[in-house]
Image 1: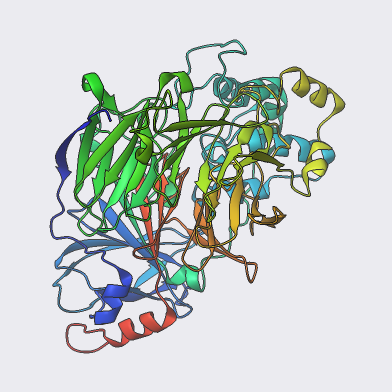
Image 2: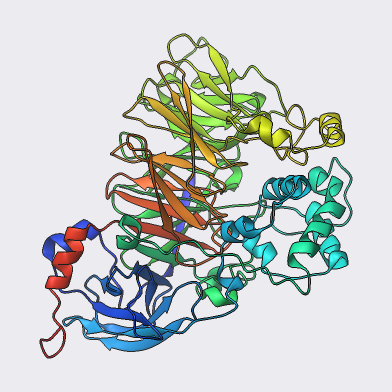
Length: 630
Protein backbone atom coordinates (compact mmCIF):
# COMPACT_ATOMS: atom_id res chain seq x y z
CA UNK A 1 0.00 0.00 0.00
CA UNK A 2 1.14 3.52 -0.75
CA UNK A 3 0.44 5.84 2.15
CA UNK A 4 -1.79 8.78 1.38
CA UNK A 5 -2.30 11.85 3.51
CA UNK A 6 -5.41 13.89 4.16
CA UNK A 7 -5.59 17.62 4.85
CA UNK A 8 -8.95 19.17 5.70
CA UNK A 9 -10.16 22.71 6.19
CA UNK A 10 -13.60 24.15 6.83
CA UNK A 11 -14.91 26.50 4.18
CA UNK A 12 -18.42 27.27 5.32
CA UNK A 13 -20.29 26.94 8.57
CA UNK A 14 -24.03 27.46 8.56
CA UNK A 15 -25.65 29.94 10.90
CA UNK A 16 -29.30 30.08 11.90
CA UNK A 17 -29.73 27.03 9.75
CA UNK A 18 -32.76 25.93 7.82
CA UNK A 19 -32.41 22.41 9.15
CA UNK A 20 -33.05 19.94 6.37
CA UNK A 21 -32.93 16.67 8.27
CA UNK A 22 -34.49 13.39 7.24
CA UNK A 23 -38.08 13.82 6.15
CA UNK A 24 -39.04 10.65 7.99
CA UNK A 25 -37.46 11.90 11.21
CA UNK A 26 -39.23 15.23 10.88
CA UNK A 27 -42.59 13.70 10.12
CA UNK A 28 -42.40 11.16 12.94
CA UNK A 29 -42.25 14.07 15.38
CA UNK A 30 -45.02 15.94 13.50
CA UNK A 31 -43.60 19.29 14.49
CA UNK A 32 -45.44 22.38 13.38
CA UNK A 33 -44.63 23.37 9.79
CA UNK A 34 -42.24 26.29 9.53
CA UNK A 35 -44.02 28.04 6.68
CA UNK A 36 -47.19 27.51 4.67
CA UNK A 37 -49.38 29.48 2.33
CA UNK A 38 -51.45 29.54 -0.84
CA UNK A 39 -50.24 30.53 -4.31
CA UNK A 40 -52.86 32.06 -6.63
CA UNK A 41 -52.88 33.51 -10.10
CA UNK A 42 -53.76 37.13 -10.81
CA UNK A 43 -57.45 36.24 -10.87
CA UNK A 44 -57.32 34.67 -7.42
CA UNK A 45 -57.46 31.04 -8.59
CA UNK A 46 -55.25 28.62 -6.62
CA UNK A 47 -52.35 27.21 -8.65
CA UNK A 48 -51.14 23.62 -8.35
CA UNK A 49 -47.57 22.49 -8.96
CA UNK A 50 -45.98 25.89 -8.34
CA UNK A 51 -42.35 25.76 -7.18
CA UNK A 52 -41.84 27.59 -3.87
CA UNK A 53 -38.24 28.13 -2.77
CA UNK A 54 -37.20 29.19 0.72
CA UNK A 55 -33.75 30.42 1.70
CA UNK A 56 -32.35 31.63 5.00
CA UNK A 57 -30.55 34.90 4.25
CA UNK A 58 -27.41 33.58 5.99
CA UNK A 59 -27.29 30.31 4.05
CA UNK A 60 -25.88 29.21 0.72
CA UNK A 61 -28.60 26.65 0.12
CA UNK A 62 -32.31 26.79 -0.54
CA UNK A 63 -35.16 24.32 -0.19
CA UNK A 64 -38.10 24.00 -2.57
CA UNK A 65 -41.54 22.42 -2.37
CA UNK A 66 -44.57 22.49 -4.68
CA UNK A 67 -48.16 23.50 -4.15
CA UNK A 68 -50.92 20.89 -4.08
CA UNK A 69 -54.20 20.97 -6.00
CA UNK A 70 -55.48 23.62 -3.54
CA UNK A 71 -52.49 25.85 -4.19
CA UNK A 72 -51.17 25.10 -0.67
CA UNK A 73 -47.46 24.65 0.08
CA UNK A 74 -45.91 23.32 3.28
CA UNK A 75 -42.36 23.52 4.62
CA UNK A 76 -41.31 21.41 7.63
CA UNK A 77 -40.20 22.90 10.93
CA UNK A 78 -37.71 25.76 10.48
CA UNK A 79 -35.25 27.36 12.85
CA UNK A 80 -35.69 31.01 13.74
CA UNK A 81 -34.26 33.45 11.22
CA UNK A 82 -34.85 35.79 8.33
CA UNK A 83 -36.02 34.04 5.18
CA UNK A 84 -36.68 34.86 1.54
CA UNK A 85 -39.40 33.00 -0.30
CA UNK A 86 -39.97 32.90 -4.06
CA UNK A 87 -42.75 31.23 -6.07
CA UNK A 88 -42.29 30.35 -9.75
CA UNK A 89 -44.20 28.73 -12.59
CA UNK A 90 -43.41 28.78 -16.29
CA UNK A 91 -45.50 31.47 -17.96
CA UNK A 92 -45.63 33.65 -14.86
CA UNK A 93 -43.36 36.23 -13.27
CA UNK A 94 -41.76 35.19 -9.99
CA UNK A 95 -43.37 36.41 -6.76
CA UNK A 96 -41.24 37.14 -3.71
CA UNK A 97 -41.47 37.96 -0.04
CA UNK A 98 -39.15 38.21 2.95
CA UNK A 99 -40.24 37.34 6.46
CA UNK A 100 -38.92 36.53 9.91
CA UNK A 101 -39.72 33.18 11.50
CA UNK A 102 -39.52 32.64 15.25
CA UNK A 103 -38.80 28.89 15.13
CA UNK A 104 -41.90 28.11 17.18
CA UNK A 105 -44.95 29.19 15.21
CA UNK A 106 -45.95 28.44 11.64
CA UNK A 107 -45.29 31.37 9.36
CA UNK A 108 -47.84 32.11 6.65
CA UNK A 109 -47.18 33.75 3.31
CA UNK A 110 -49.59 33.95 0.39
CA UNK A 111 -48.29 34.97 -3.03
CA UNK A 112 -49.85 35.86 -6.37
CA UNK A 113 -48.31 35.12 -9.77
CA UNK A 114 -48.84 37.42 -12.75
CA UNK A 115 -48.78 36.03 -16.30
CA UNK A 116 -45.64 36.50 -18.39
CA UNK A 117 -46.12 36.68 -22.14
CA UNK A 118 -42.55 35.86 -23.24
CA UNK A 119 -41.48 32.98 -21.03
CA UNK A 120 -38.79 31.54 -23.32
CA UNK A 121 -35.99 32.02 -20.80
CA UNK A 122 -37.95 29.89 -18.32
CA UNK A 123 -38.03 26.80 -20.55
CA UNK A 124 -35.75 23.80 -20.15
CA UNK A 125 -33.83 22.14 -22.97
CA UNK A 126 -36.45 19.48 -23.62
CA UNK A 127 -39.23 22.04 -23.93
CA UNK A 128 -37.21 24.01 -26.47
CA UNK A 129 -36.25 20.89 -28.43
CA UNK A 130 -39.78 19.54 -28.43
CA UNK A 131 -41.04 22.81 -29.91
CA UNK A 132 -38.64 22.77 -32.87
CA UNK A 133 -40.19 21.95 -36.25
CA UNK A 134 -39.73 18.44 -37.61
CA UNK A 135 -42.32 18.68 -40.36
CA UNK A 136 -40.01 17.48 -43.13
CA UNK A 137 -37.34 14.85 -43.61
CA UNK A 138 -34.70 17.58 -43.72
CA UNK A 139 -35.91 19.08 -40.43
CA UNK A 140 -36.04 15.68 -38.74
CA UNK A 141 -32.50 14.92 -39.87
CA UNK A 142 -30.86 18.14 -38.71
CA UNK A 143 -32.89 18.14 -35.50
CA UNK A 144 -31.59 14.65 -34.71
CA UNK A 145 -28.02 15.73 -35.46
CA UNK A 146 -28.39 18.69 -33.10
CA UNK A 147 -29.92 16.51 -30.36
CA UNK A 148 -26.75 14.42 -30.17
CA UNK A 149 -23.97 16.76 -31.33
CA UNK A 150 -24.94 19.94 -29.48
CA UNK A 151 -25.86 18.66 -26.01
CA UNK A 152 -22.77 16.93 -24.66
CA UNK A 153 -21.64 19.76 -22.39
CA UNK A 154 -24.84 21.76 -21.89
CA UNK A 155 -28.54 21.53 -22.56
CA UNK A 156 -30.31 23.12 -25.52
CA UNK A 157 -31.92 25.81 -23.37
CA UNK A 158 -28.46 27.39 -23.19
CA UNK A 159 -28.46 27.49 -27.00
CA UNK A 160 -32.06 28.27 -27.92
CA UNK A 161 -32.65 31.06 -25.43
CA UNK A 162 -30.71 33.16 -27.97
CA UNK A 163 -31.52 34.61 -31.41
CA UNK A 164 -28.93 35.10 -34.18
CA UNK A 165 -28.98 35.38 -37.94
CA UNK A 166 -27.33 32.65 -39.99
CA UNK A 167 -23.92 34.32 -39.92
CA UNK A 168 -24.10 34.68 -36.15
CA UNK A 169 -25.16 31.08 -35.65
CA UNK A 170 -22.32 29.94 -37.91
CA UNK A 171 -19.83 31.73 -35.67
CA UNK A 172 -21.38 30.11 -32.58
CA UNK A 173 -21.34 26.62 -34.10
CA UNK A 174 -17.74 27.03 -35.26
CA UNK A 175 -16.67 28.01 -31.76
CA UNK A 176 -18.42 24.91 -30.40
CA UNK A 177 -16.67 22.55 -32.80
CA UNK A 178 -13.32 23.76 -31.42
CA UNK A 179 -14.36 23.99 -27.77
CA UNK A 180 -12.91 21.93 -24.93
CA UNK A 181 -15.17 20.64 -22.17
CA UNK A 182 -14.55 23.54 -19.82
CA UNK A 183 -15.32 26.10 -22.54
CA UNK A 184 -11.76 26.92 -23.64
CA UNK A 185 -11.41 27.42 -27.42
CA UNK A 186 -7.75 27.44 -28.48
CA UNK A 187 -8.45 28.21 -32.16
CA UNK A 188 -9.11 26.20 -35.29
CA UNK A 189 -8.06 22.65 -34.43
CA UNK A 190 -7.29 19.77 -36.74
CA UNK A 191 -9.37 16.60 -36.60
CA UNK A 192 -6.99 14.85 -34.21
CA UNK A 193 -7.22 17.75 -31.74
CA UNK A 194 -10.99 18.17 -31.72
CA UNK A 195 -12.97 17.14 -28.65
CA UNK A 196 -16.62 16.23 -28.11
CA UNK A 197 -18.42 15.78 -31.47
CA UNK A 198 -16.03 18.24 -33.10
CA UNK A 199 -15.82 16.41 -36.42
CA UNK A 200 -19.59 15.89 -36.52
CA UNK A 201 -20.28 19.55 -35.75
CA UNK A 202 -17.72 20.68 -38.33
CA UNK A 203 -19.30 18.59 -41.08
CA UNK A 204 -22.79 19.89 -40.36
CA UNK A 205 -21.86 23.45 -39.31
CA UNK A 206 -23.51 25.25 -42.21
CA UNK A 207 -26.65 23.11 -42.00
CA UNK A 208 -26.93 23.65 -38.25
CA UNK A 209 -26.48 27.40 -38.63
CA UNK A 210 -29.12 27.53 -41.36
CA UNK A 211 -31.62 25.55 -39.28
CA UNK A 212 -30.94 27.56 -36.14
CA UNK A 213 -31.43 30.82 -38.05
CA UNK A 214 -34.70 29.46 -39.38
CA UNK A 215 -36.07 28.50 -35.97
CA UNK A 216 -34.25 31.04 -33.76
CA UNK A 217 -33.40 33.94 -36.04
CA UNK A 218 -33.72 37.63 -35.09
CA UNK A 219 -37.46 37.65 -35.85
CA UNK A 220 -38.23 34.18 -34.45
CA UNK A 221 -41.57 33.94 -32.71
CA UNK A 222 -41.10 30.34 -31.59
CA UNK A 223 -42.36 29.89 -28.03
CA UNK A 224 -42.75 26.20 -27.18
CA UNK A 225 -45.45 24.89 -24.89
CA UNK A 226 -44.15 24.12 -21.37
CA UNK A 227 -44.50 20.78 -19.65
CA UNK A 228 -47.33 20.33 -17.13
CA UNK A 229 -46.38 21.36 -13.61
CA UNK A 230 -45.53 18.63 -11.06
CA UNK A 231 -48.31 16.59 -9.48
CA UNK A 232 -48.58 13.54 -7.22
CA UNK A 233 -45.32 12.18 -5.82
CA UNK A 234 -43.29 14.77 -7.73
CA UNK A 235 -45.24 17.65 -6.18
CA UNK A 236 -44.89 16.20 -2.68
CA UNK A 237 -41.08 15.97 -2.83
CA UNK A 238 -38.86 18.43 -0.96
CA UNK A 239 -35.73 19.45 -2.85
CA UNK A 240 -32.68 21.16 -1.36
CA UNK A 241 -29.91 22.70 -3.48
CA UNK A 242 -26.51 23.21 -1.86
CA UNK A 243 -24.22 25.69 -3.59
CA UNK A 244 -20.48 25.47 -3.25
CA UNK A 245 -19.41 28.81 -1.77
CA UNK A 246 -18.20 30.82 -4.72
CA UNK A 247 -15.83 32.99 -2.68
CA UNK A 248 -13.79 29.88 -1.93
CA UNK A 249 -13.25 28.81 -5.53
CA UNK A 250 -10.04 29.73 -7.29
CA UNK A 251 -11.71 30.75 -10.56
CA UNK A 252 -14.71 32.79 -11.65
CA UNK A 253 -18.20 31.80 -10.53
CA UNK A 254 -20.84 30.37 -12.79
CA UNK A 255 -22.83 32.93 -14.76
CA UNK A 256 -26.19 33.08 -13.02
CA UNK A 257 -27.32 30.21 -10.86
CA UNK A 258 -30.54 29.27 -12.59
CA UNK A 259 -32.50 30.09 -9.44
CA UNK A 260 -34.69 32.71 -11.09
CA UNK A 261 -36.01 31.13 -14.25
CA UNK A 262 -36.73 34.40 -16.05
CA UNK A 263 -32.97 35.11 -16.13
CA UNK A 264 -32.31 31.90 -18.03
CA UNK A 265 -30.37 28.78 -17.06
CA UNK A 266 -26.94 28.66 -15.55
CA UNK A 267 -24.77 28.89 -18.63
CA UNK A 268 -21.72 26.90 -17.69
CA UNK A 269 -18.60 27.20 -15.66
CA UNK A 270 -16.50 29.14 -18.22
CA UNK A 271 -13.27 27.44 -17.24
CA UNK A 272 -14.26 26.81 -13.64
CA UNK A 273 -14.53 23.33 -12.23
CA UNK A 274 -18.03 21.91 -12.16
CA UNK A 275 -19.49 19.26 -9.86
CA UNK A 276 -19.42 15.70 -11.17
CA UNK A 277 -20.51 13.19 -8.49
CA UNK A 278 -22.14 13.21 -5.07
CA UNK A 279 -22.59 10.30 -2.62
CA UNK A 280 -24.25 10.23 0.82
CA UNK A 281 -22.56 8.17 3.53
CA UNK A 282 -23.66 6.20 6.58
CA UNK A 283 -23.37 9.29 8.80
CA UNK A 284 -25.68 11.38 6.66
CA UNK A 285 -22.81 13.39 5.17
CA UNK A 286 -22.42 13.90 1.42
CA UNK A 287 -19.16 13.62 -0.53
CA UNK A 288 -18.75 15.80 -3.61
CA UNK A 289 -16.25 15.46 -6.44
CA UNK A 290 -15.38 17.85 -9.23
CA UNK A 291 -15.35 17.56 -12.99
CA UNK A 292 -13.81 18.51 -16.28
CA UNK A 293 -10.22 18.80 -17.42
CA UNK A 294 -9.14 21.33 -14.81
CA UNK A 295 -9.34 20.95 -11.06
CA UNK A 296 -9.33 23.32 -8.14
CA UNK A 297 -5.93 23.06 -6.52
CA UNK A 298 -7.25 23.36 -2.97
CA UNK A 299 -9.34 20.19 -2.76
CA UNK A 300 -9.60 16.54 -3.69
CA UNK A 301 -13.15 16.14 -2.41
CA UNK A 302 -15.70 18.24 -0.54
CA UNK A 303 -17.57 16.93 2.49
CA UNK A 304 -21.03 18.42 3.05
CA UNK A 305 -23.18 18.40 6.19
CA UNK A 306 -26.69 18.50 4.67
CA UNK A 307 -28.32 19.67 7.90
CA UNK A 308 -26.31 22.87 8.22
CA UNK A 309 -24.71 23.37 4.83
CA UNK A 310 -21.24 23.27 6.40
CA UNK A 311 -18.57 22.12 3.96
CA UNK A 312 -14.99 20.93 4.23
CA UNK A 313 -12.41 20.97 1.48
CA UNK A 314 -10.35 17.80 1.86
CA UNK A 315 -7.00 17.36 0.17
CA UNK A 316 -5.65 13.84 -0.29
CA UNK A 317 -2.02 13.32 -1.26
CA UNK A 318 -0.22 10.25 -2.49
CA UNK A 319 3.44 9.39 -2.96
CA UNK A 320 5.83 12.32 -3.38
CA UNK A 321 3.17 14.61 -1.94
CA UNK A 322 1.18 14.28 -5.16
CA UNK A 323 -2.32 15.69 -4.81
CA UNK A 324 -5.09 13.31 -5.89
CA UNK A 325 -8.20 14.46 -7.73
CA UNK A 326 -11.37 12.40 -7.69
CA UNK A 327 -14.04 12.86 -10.34
CA UNK A 328 -16.33 9.84 -10.05
CA UNK A 329 -17.08 7.80 -6.93
CA UNK A 330 -19.11 4.73 -6.01
CA UNK A 331 -22.10 4.31 -3.73
CA UNK A 332 -21.20 2.80 -0.36
CA UNK A 333 -20.23 -0.87 -0.20
CA UNK A 334 -21.51 -3.48 2.25
CA UNK A 335 -19.19 -2.13 4.95
CA UNK A 336 -20.26 1.47 4.32
CA UNK A 337 -16.93 2.34 2.69
CA UNK A 338 -16.84 4.59 -0.37
CA UNK A 339 -14.49 3.76 -3.24
CA UNK A 340 -13.04 6.19 -5.76
CA UNK A 341 -9.96 6.56 -7.88
CA UNK A 342 -7.64 9.43 -8.65
CA UNK A 343 -4.91 9.20 -11.26
CA UNK A 344 -3.05 5.92 -10.69
CA UNK A 345 -4.59 5.31 -7.25
CA UNK A 346 -7.65 3.41 -6.20
CA UNK A 347 -8.83 4.78 -2.85
CA UNK A 348 -11.14 3.51 -0.12
CA UNK A 349 -12.75 6.01 2.25
CA UNK A 350 -13.99 4.98 5.68
CA UNK A 351 -16.62 7.65 6.41
CA UNK A 352 -16.73 6.76 10.09
CA UNK A 353 -13.16 7.97 10.54
CA UNK A 354 -12.65 10.00 7.36
CA UNK A 355 -9.61 7.80 6.72
CA UNK A 356 -8.44 7.37 3.12
CA UNK A 357 -6.47 4.27 2.08
CA UNK A 358 -4.88 4.24 -1.35
CA UNK A 359 -3.13 1.70 -3.56
CA UNK A 360 -1.24 2.53 -6.72
CA UNK A 361 -2.15 0.57 -9.80
CA UNK A 362 0.72 -0.94 -11.82
CA UNK A 363 1.62 1.45 -14.62
CA UNK A 364 1.74 -1.40 -17.14
CA UNK A 365 -2.05 -1.71 -16.90
CA UNK A 366 -2.54 1.78 -18.29
CA UNK A 367 -4.74 4.50 -16.90
CA UNK A 368 -7.93 3.89 -14.97
CA UNK A 369 -11.11 5.25 -16.47
CA UNK A 370 -13.94 7.11 -14.86
CA UNK A 371 -16.35 5.04 -12.76
CA UNK A 372 -15.80 2.88 -9.68
CA UNK A 373 -17.76 0.13 -7.92
CA UNK A 374 -17.10 -2.66 -5.42
CA UNK A 375 -18.19 -6.29 -5.31
CA UNK A 376 -19.57 -8.36 -2.43
CA UNK A 377 -16.07 -9.50 -1.42
CA UNK A 378 -14.73 -5.98 -1.00
CA UNK A 379 -12.84 -5.82 -4.30
CA UNK A 380 -12.67 -2.43 -5.98
CA UNK A 381 -13.59 -2.27 -9.65
CA UNK A 382 -12.87 0.57 -12.09
CA UNK A 383 -13.09 1.32 -15.77
CA UNK A 384 -9.86 0.92 -17.72
CA UNK A 385 -8.75 1.39 -21.28
CA UNK A 386 -10.18 -1.51 -23.29
CA UNK A 387 -11.74 -3.16 -20.25
CA UNK A 388 -11.79 -3.16 -16.48
CA UNK A 389 -9.34 -3.28 -13.57
CA UNK A 390 -10.11 -5.15 -10.34
CA UNK A 391 -8.25 -4.57 -7.08
CA UNK A 392 -8.39 -7.21 -4.33
CA UNK A 393 -6.81 -6.04 -1.03
CA UNK A 394 -6.83 -9.64 0.22
CA UNK A 395 -4.31 -10.63 -2.46
CA UNK A 396 -1.66 -8.02 -1.68
CA UNK A 397 0.49 -10.63 0.03
CA UNK A 398 0.68 -13.00 -2.94
CA UNK A 399 4.22 -13.92 -4.03
CA UNK A 400 3.38 -15.94 -7.15
CA UNK A 401 2.22 -13.07 -9.37
CA UNK A 402 3.84 -9.94 -10.74
CA UNK A 403 1.21 -7.50 -9.53
CA UNK A 404 -0.35 -8.74 -6.28
CA UNK A 405 -3.93 -7.62 -5.82
CA UNK A 406 -4.39 -6.32 -9.36
CA UNK A 407 -6.27 -7.87 -12.28
CA UNK A 408 -6.89 -6.44 -15.75
CA UNK A 409 -9.63 -7.86 -17.98
CA UNK A 410 -10.01 -6.81 -21.60
CA UNK A 411 -13.16 -6.44 -23.63
CA UNK A 412 -13.63 -8.17 -26.98
CA UNK A 413 -14.17 -5.08 -29.13
CA UNK A 414 -11.25 -2.69 -29.34
CA UNK A 415 -13.05 0.47 -30.44
CA UNK A 416 -11.16 3.54 -29.28
CA UNK A 417 -10.60 1.94 -25.87
CA UNK A 418 -12.99 4.18 -23.96
CA UNK A 419 -15.13 2.56 -21.29
CA UNK A 420 -17.64 4.67 -19.40
CA UNK A 421 -19.67 3.49 -16.45
CA UNK A 422 -19.16 0.31 -14.44
CA UNK A 423 -21.24 -1.75 -12.01
CA UNK A 424 -21.12 -5.11 -10.22
CA UNK A 425 -24.33 -7.15 -10.16
CA UNK A 426 -25.83 -9.48 -7.55
CA UNK A 427 -23.65 -12.38 -8.82
CA UNK A 428 -20.44 -10.28 -8.74
CA UNK A 429 -20.37 -10.11 -12.53
CA UNK A 430 -18.79 -6.88 -13.76
CA UNK A 431 -20.65 -4.76 -16.33
CA UNK A 432 -19.31 -1.77 -18.21
CA UNK A 433 -20.30 0.47 -21.12
CA UNK A 434 -18.33 0.71 -24.36
CA UNK A 435 -19.97 4.02 -25.11
CA UNK A 436 -18.53 4.90 -28.51
CA UNK A 437 -19.31 1.53 -30.11
CA UNK A 438 -22.82 1.03 -28.63
CA UNK A 439 -21.93 -2.05 -26.61
CA UNK A 440 -22.11 -3.22 -23.01
CA UNK A 441 -19.59 -5.78 -21.75
CA UNK A 442 -19.95 -8.27 -18.91
CA UNK A 443 -17.25 -10.36 -17.22
CA UNK A 444 -18.71 -13.50 -15.69
CA UNK A 445 -17.48 -13.93 -12.11
CA UNK A 446 -17.51 -17.74 -12.34
CA UNK A 447 -16.08 -18.41 -15.79
CA UNK A 448 -14.04 -15.28 -16.38
CA UNK A 449 -15.55 -15.01 -19.86
CA UNK A 450 -16.26 -11.55 -21.26
CA UNK A 451 -19.51 -11.24 -23.22
CA UNK A 452 -20.61 -8.18 -25.18
CA UNK A 453 -24.13 -6.99 -25.92
CA UNK A 454 -25.06 -4.80 -28.88
CA UNK A 455 -27.13 -1.89 -27.61
CA UNK A 456 -29.32 -0.86 -30.53
CA UNK A 457 -32.84 0.13 -29.56
CA UNK A 458 -35.93 -0.60 -31.73
CA UNK A 459 -35.75 2.87 -33.35
CA UNK A 460 -32.06 2.65 -34.28
CA UNK A 461 -32.56 1.95 -37.98
CA UNK A 462 -35.26 4.61 -38.26
CA UNK A 463 -32.85 7.24 -36.97
CA UNK A 464 -30.06 5.95 -39.19
CA UNK A 465 -32.43 6.26 -42.11
CA UNK A 466 -32.68 10.01 -41.52
CA UNK A 467 -29.04 10.40 -42.53
CA UNK A 468 -28.09 10.76 -46.20
CA UNK A 469 -25.94 8.28 -48.08
CA UNK A 470 -23.21 10.91 -48.10
CA UNK A 471 -23.50 11.29 -44.32
CA UNK A 472 -23.07 7.57 -43.76
CA UNK A 473 -20.08 7.32 -46.09
CA UNK A 474 -18.39 10.22 -44.36
CA UNK A 475 -19.17 8.89 -40.86
CA UNK A 476 -17.61 5.57 -41.82
CA UNK A 477 -14.50 7.30 -43.15
CA UNK A 478 -13.78 8.97 -39.79
CA UNK A 479 -14.36 5.79 -37.80
CA UNK A 480 -17.62 6.90 -36.25
CA UNK A 481 -18.99 4.12 -34.05
CA UNK A 482 -15.92 1.93 -34.59
CA UNK A 483 -12.35 3.13 -33.95
CA UNK A 484 -12.85 6.89 -33.63
CA UNK A 485 -12.26 9.12 -30.64
CA UNK A 486 -15.14 11.16 -29.25
CA UNK A 487 -14.84 13.92 -31.84
CA UNK A 488 -16.48 11.42 -34.23
CA UNK A 489 -18.76 9.46 -31.89
CA UNK A 490 -21.52 9.04 -30.95
CA UNK A 491 -23.02 9.39 -34.41
CA UNK A 492 -26.45 11.09 -34.54
CA UNK A 493 -28.32 7.78 -34.62
CA UNK A 494 -26.28 5.89 -32.00
CA UNK A 495 -27.41 5.13 -28.42
CA UNK A 496 -24.21 5.74 -26.40
CA UNK A 497 -24.69 3.65 -23.23
CA UNK A 498 -23.24 5.57 -20.31
CA UNK A 499 -23.14 5.23 -16.51
CA UNK A 500 -25.04 2.00 -15.87
CA UNK A 501 -26.06 0.47 -12.53
CA UNK A 502 -26.90 -3.03 -11.37
CA UNK A 503 -29.70 -3.80 -8.95
CA UNK A 504 -27.53 -5.25 -6.18
CA UNK A 505 -30.51 -7.15 -4.79
CA UNK A 506 -32.22 -7.98 -8.05
CA UNK A 507 -31.69 -9.53 -11.46
CA UNK A 508 -31.22 -6.53 -13.75
CA UNK A 509 -28.53 -4.16 -14.93
CA UNK A 510 -29.95 -0.82 -16.04
CA UNK A 511 -28.21 1.02 -18.86
CA UNK A 512 -28.92 4.68 -19.78
CA UNK A 513 -28.84 5.39 -23.52
CA UNK A 514 -27.57 8.95 -23.35
CA UNK A 515 -27.63 9.79 -27.06
CA UNK A 516 -31.31 8.91 -27.30
CA UNK A 517 -34.18 8.66 -24.79
CA UNK A 518 -34.38 5.22 -23.21
CA UNK A 519 -32.92 2.93 -20.59
CA UNK A 520 -32.29 -0.75 -21.19
CA UNK A 521 -32.73 -3.51 -18.64
CA UNK A 522 -30.45 -6.53 -19.09
CA UNK A 523 -31.44 -9.68 -17.19
CA UNK A 524 -28.28 -10.96 -15.49
CA UNK A 525 -29.49 -14.58 -15.75
CA UNK A 526 -31.03 -14.80 -19.24
CA UNK A 527 -29.31 -11.77 -20.81
CA UNK A 528 -32.63 -10.68 -22.29
CA UNK A 529 -32.68 -6.94 -23.05
CA UNK A 530 -35.82 -4.85 -22.56
CA UNK A 531 -36.16 -1.23 -23.67
CA UNK A 532 -37.99 1.51 -21.79
CA UNK A 533 -38.44 4.97 -23.26
CA UNK A 534 -38.43 7.92 -20.89
CA UNK A 535 -41.75 9.79 -20.71
CA UNK A 536 -40.21 12.66 -22.70
CA UNK A 537 -37.46 12.84 -25.32
CA UNK A 538 -34.42 13.59 -23.19
CA UNK A 539 -30.91 12.32 -22.44
CA UNK A 540 -30.52 9.81 -19.53
CA UNK A 541 -26.95 9.89 -18.19
CA UNK A 542 -26.66 7.77 -15.02
CA UNK A 543 -28.84 5.12 -13.43
CA UNK A 544 -29.21 3.95 -9.85
CA UNK A 545 -31.62 1.57 -8.12
CA UNK A 546 -33.49 2.13 -4.86
CA UNK A 547 -34.58 -0.31 -2.15
CA UNK A 548 -37.89 -0.98 -3.95
CA UNK A 549 -36.11 -1.86 -7.22
CA UNK A 550 -37.21 1.39 -8.82
CA UNK A 551 -34.73 2.68 -11.38
CA UNK A 552 -33.65 6.31 -11.29
CA UNK A 553 -31.96 8.33 -13.99
CA UNK A 554 -31.06 11.97 -14.49
CA UNK A 555 -31.26 14.27 -17.49
CA UNK A 556 -29.53 17.57 -18.09
CA UNK A 557 -31.79 18.28 -21.06
CA UNK A 558 -34.95 18.08 -18.95
CA UNK A 559 -33.31 19.40 -15.77
CA UNK A 560 -34.85 16.62 -13.72
CA UNK A 561 -34.55 13.23 -12.07
CA UNK A 562 -36.76 10.39 -13.31
CA UNK A 563 -38.08 7.35 -11.45
CA UNK A 564 -39.10 4.20 -13.31
CA UNK A 565 -41.13 1.40 -11.74
CA UNK A 566 -40.22 -1.77 -13.69
CA UNK A 567 -43.28 -3.61 -12.40
CA UNK A 568 -45.91 -1.07 -13.43
CA UNK A 569 -43.96 0.63 -16.21
CA UNK A 570 -44.78 4.00 -14.63
CA UNK A 571 -42.41 6.97 -14.93
CA UNK A 572 -42.34 9.97 -12.59
CA UNK A 573 -40.42 13.17 -13.36
CA UNK A 574 -38.97 15.16 -10.44
CA UNK A 575 -37.87 18.64 -11.61
CA UNK A 576 -34.74 20.32 -10.24
CA UNK A 577 -35.88 23.72 -8.89
CA UNK A 578 -33.15 25.85 -10.49
CA UNK A 579 -32.41 25.64 -14.20
CA UNK A 580 -29.23 24.69 -16.03
CA UNK A 581 -27.99 21.88 -13.76
CA UNK A 582 -26.53 19.68 -16.55
CA UNK A 583 -26.11 16.63 -14.31
CA UNK A 584 -23.73 13.76 -15.11
CA UNK A 585 -24.47 11.56 -12.13
CA UNK A 586 -27.05 10.66 -9.55
CA UNK A 587 -26.92 8.42 -6.51
CA UNK A 588 -29.28 6.68 -4.14
CA UNK A 589 -28.86 7.19 -0.40
CA UNK A 590 -29.91 3.81 0.96
CA UNK A 591 -29.61 5.03 4.54
CA UNK A 592 -32.26 7.75 4.18
CA UNK A 593 -34.09 6.64 1.01
CA UNK A 594 -33.15 9.85 -0.81
CA UNK A 595 -31.77 10.79 -4.22
CA UNK A 596 -28.81 13.09 -4.87
CA UNK A 597 -27.98 14.84 -8.16
CA UNK A 598 -24.85 16.96 -8.83
CA UNK A 599 -24.98 20.00 -11.13
CA UNK A 600 -21.99 20.29 -13.42
CA UNK A 601 -22.95 23.65 -14.90
CA UNK A 602 -24.18 25.46 -11.78
CA UNK A 603 -21.79 24.30 -9.04
CA UNK A 604 -24.34 22.80 -6.67
CA UNK A 605 -25.70 19.45 -5.50
CA UNK A 606 -29.38 18.60 -5.23
CA UNK A 607 -31.06 16.45 -2.58
CA UNK A 608 -34.53 14.92 -3.16
CA UNK A 609 -36.52 13.93 -0.08
CA UNK A 610 -39.89 12.26 -0.43
CA UNK A 611 -43.08 13.04 1.48
CA UNK A 612 -46.29 11.03 1.35
CA UNK A 613 -49.79 12.46 1.22
CA UNK A 614 -50.34 11.19 4.76
CA UNK A 615 -47.22 12.93 6.04
CA UNK A 616 -48.26 16.22 4.49
CA UNK A 617 -51.75 15.90 5.92
CA UNK A 618 -50.31 15.37 9.41
CA UNK A 619 -47.90 18.26 8.92
CA UNK A 620 -50.68 20.63 7.94
CA UNK A 621 -52.78 19.50 10.91
CA UNK A 622 -49.90 20.43 13.24
CA UNK A 623 -49.74 24.03 11.97
CA UNK A 624 -49.35 26.55 14.78
CA UNK A 625 -49.57 30.09 13.37
CA UNK A 626 -49.28 33.17 15.54
CA UNK A 627 -52.70 33.84 17.00
CA UNK A 628 -53.72 30.20 16.77
CA UNK A 629 -55.62 30.41 13.48
CA UNK A 630 -54.69 28.63 10.26
